Length: 206
Image (cartoon, rainbow, N blue to C red; front, side, top):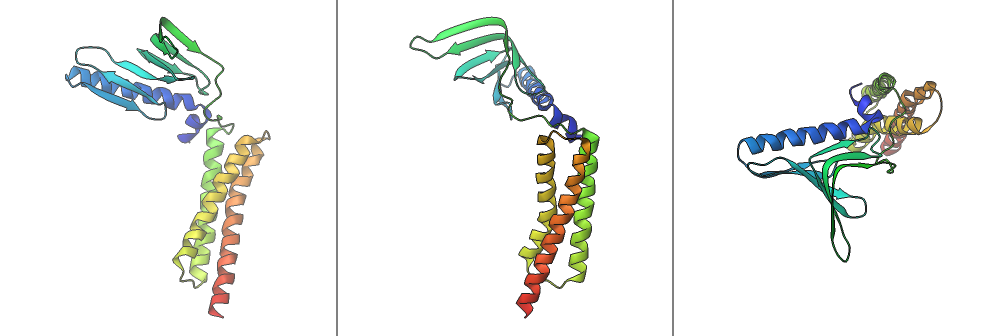
């Protein structure tokens, strides 16, 4: 459930990371410790100079370097807004542009937002985990198998199928009933892995 809102609006996570980086930078400035704070995922950094203010630096589209006091990212990562920004445009004669507010819109989203509501995503994943675990437990208790690789394959079959089905459901423009495919895929993959393991185990003993 907690993962759902970030999946539907990945820009929220980006803004939270930028805010956390700025807070660390301001703390370093207050302590008089100049440093660089790297913000993951967003691919920007804060320059924390002693006695100054945090400067956020990074690279925009087209190899344009920029520096700004703050950065606000759209929920779907298709745009951003920077305040007190300076842009360095590469050319035969380097050009520096200074603007109060720079807004960029219409970018290709870094990742497609999820179309699945958080509570439905959580329910589907929990049911998939329970179904795959029950099948794996039944197989482990009723079948004699010594190969550790086979057990690992059985354990991974259900979760991998569940994640693949969830991704397919997010891309499909269907009703919410599509999420029934997630636990069904997990159980089916676990049953198939169990059956394959049993067949291979009987052939090996024979």
